[in-house]
Image 1 (cartoon, rainbow, N blue to C red):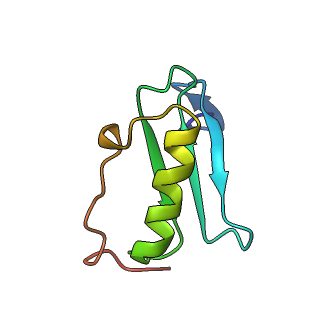
Image 2: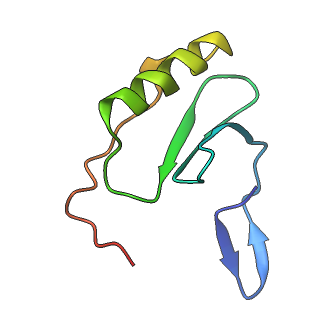
Length: 80
C-alpha cells in the first residue's frame, strides 16, 4: 500500500493489512504486520463509542496494542 502518488507512480510503499472492515465500508482498520501501529480510516469525522469499543476488542484479539493507535480530532475537517 502506498499513500503517495507522484505523476502516476506510487511512492513509499509499505506492508499494511486491512485488519478490520465495517460491513457497510463506513470504516476500515489498517495495521502493519509487525503489529506496532495502525490506522482507523473512517468515512465520517467520528465513530460511535460502541463501534470503537468493538474495534478495540477485535484489535486486542489480533495482537494489536490499542495504545499505539491514535485518535485524531476530525471535527474540523470537511467531508467531500
